[in-house]
Length: 107
Image (cartoon, rainbow, N blue to C red; front, side, top):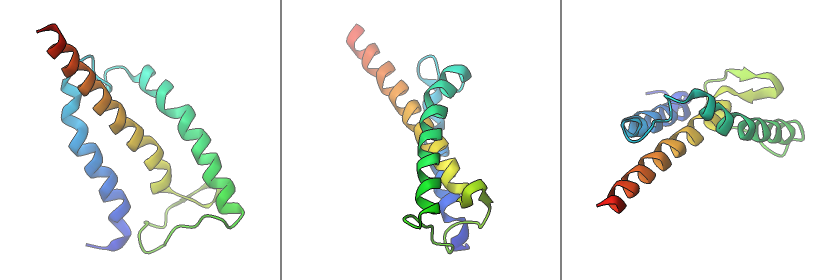
């Protein structure tokens, strides 16, 4: 396996591991407007933050561990996906835990 794919593989594994959590409660994927409202504004702030840090030479990415696909402002594709995938996984986890705790409370 090439090291260049590690970041994407880890993001994919995060999605795969949390995907079954969609079965709990009202779901995250089934409410796309709510998902976008939760993830996109925060992702935009952190993407801008990264872009500024990259431009200032404060922040870099090791080319050995990213695919080399760059978005505007020299931002690696994987970093943009990180700000979408990790909050999504957190929402899936939060939704599942909240649902399970609510069910236990009703007993």
